[in-house]
Length: 242
Image (cartoon, rainbow, N blue to C red):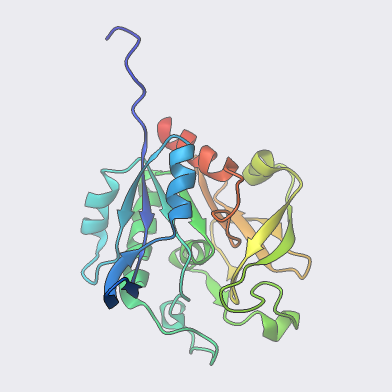
């Protein structure tokens, strides 16, 4: 060792979707897809991205084999978690279930927490974190809050303030509040083992974290379409110093 070895970039796994995609002459081709914004943020933060497609045969052993090759993990946003996973009948507004993705991400979160692997959950990802811990979700926010500000119309992000709890890790990263991109009609209700660290004005839980972990944060908003890299920088730095 000379003391001048190049810094090895942490490998950050990011979960992806499997959806039909139109691409040139190829119509409705079943594809592993992920908004590139996630990749761009992780790369700007100094990490290397490994995209993780969902698998129907995912179990704890397979998840462990994947996680052993990672330094950090992002559970990306996407379709609703199947209410059956947390013991509820589906609301009429709930989207079609993605059982392969639910199974895969629950196993990955379970394994990441056991290993102390730095973990960031985005929107659906925060909900997966809560459900994996034995929590539950509010299936259709407009029934309670009486508005659609969290998801104003298909394909368009909402924009609202999130107030963050003092002395929390996320407060230390982002300050008293953030103006957040929002695209969700569900929210976390219960979250065993995680502390509530951020709320919208209507009381919706917008962030949570494991106070005993090096880095395990869930945000209900979408940081990836914006230019603010701070959450991804913090994740990559935690991964670098595991």
